[in-house]
Image 1 (cartoon, rainbow, N blue to C red):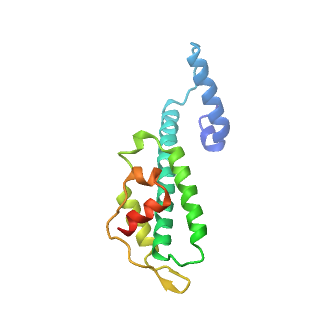
Image 2 (image 1 turned 90 degrees about the vertical axis):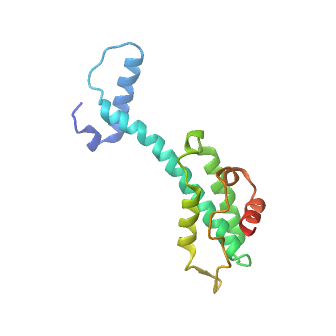
Image 3 (image 1 turned 30 degrees about the vertical axis):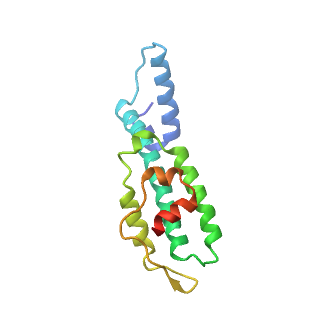
Length: 153
């Protein structure tokens, strides 16, 4: 296969590389495996999963801050539904090796900063803790009521 197949048609490239890997796994001697790119792609799969979990956690924190900051907003039911959805997706994709790589404090700071100037229903938000009050395990498992109580404490 041409060397630039990865750049021209990544789907065809990936199918071809997977076929070669399976053949090697069966003990065949084959040529044409793009070892460097295959290794990079495998690494990217893990990073993609890590970034997905970070994204879901960031959205979860953002929506917790919205419910806490604007408790009387008409959007609260929608935000609560989103929190449950984001938590479910984060929990489903979370892997133990991500624990040391996820910076919950930074996710909290980013969410707070993104919402600082927001106004809902004509009002600015109520007070938020300056430091992250959450632990990773809480965000992945605790129900909304517990997470909101942690935020209010």
